[in-house]
Image 1 (cartoon, one colour):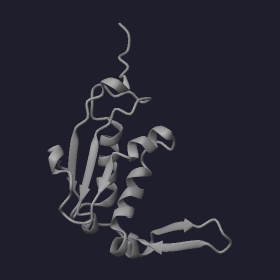
Image 2 (image 1 turned 90 degrees about the vertical axis):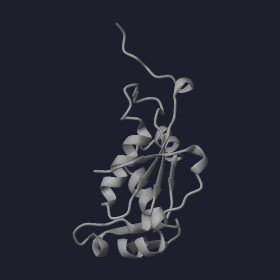
Image 3 (image 1 turned 180 degrees about the horizontal axis):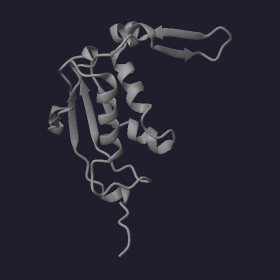
Image 4 (image 1 turned 60 degrees about the vertical axis):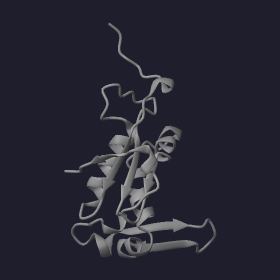
Length: 143
């Protein structure tokens, strides 16, 4: 008996919505990354993008444990001399909660073209409303 290998043409994709309010950032991100990779399916194949779509709502209400709100830093560099920009997690959560959540999830995906394709199936929203109601997303609980 040979090992089953999923083909990208035969992948069936579902939509899931995760409510991130009052949940830890890492727990939400790891659950979302697992769904995006397709590890929750019996037909999981590492070399194929067999994951589902994930919608994360209430990204501005996510929690950070310990002293991470003040200590955790996010860095961007423009490529020019002196172009380093540093922001702590408190500033990111107030001004850019979507980017903060996307960085956490995409950091848990493979760092290659397959991971970039998986990252395109992630949708993050600051508030509770999203524009994907037509896809009938399934509510997903994070424990």
